[in-house]
Image 1 (cartoon, rainbow, N blue to C red):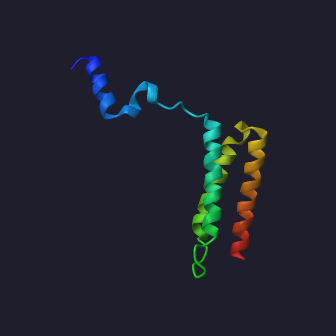
Image 2: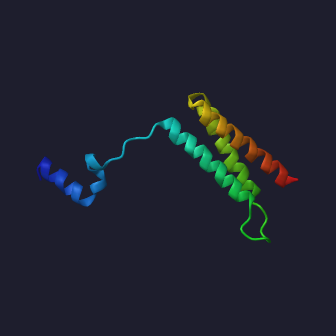
Image 3: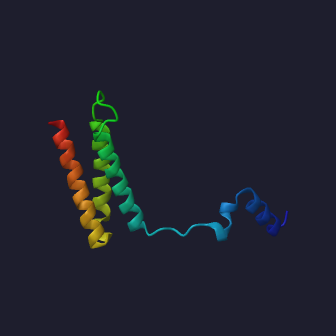
Length: 103
């Protein structure tokens, strides 16, 4: 197969790999900021059981907050001030919620 035939075959098999269909890479600061926020939302969900007889999953909440905190510490200086402030508040609230649940 020639190069152009290879390219056409690849586009038919996996059109998302064609150059015109590839997504631009998001700014890493935004991506990691969103990841930290997602981990903190997950931690909040672990602290609120789905049923009244299920206890909170403190272990999973703590892990999510610990990883979010490490990632935040690594990227905080690169974040916009408003994003840094919002994530700082979220991280603090998540840590306090875990302490309250522990009793």
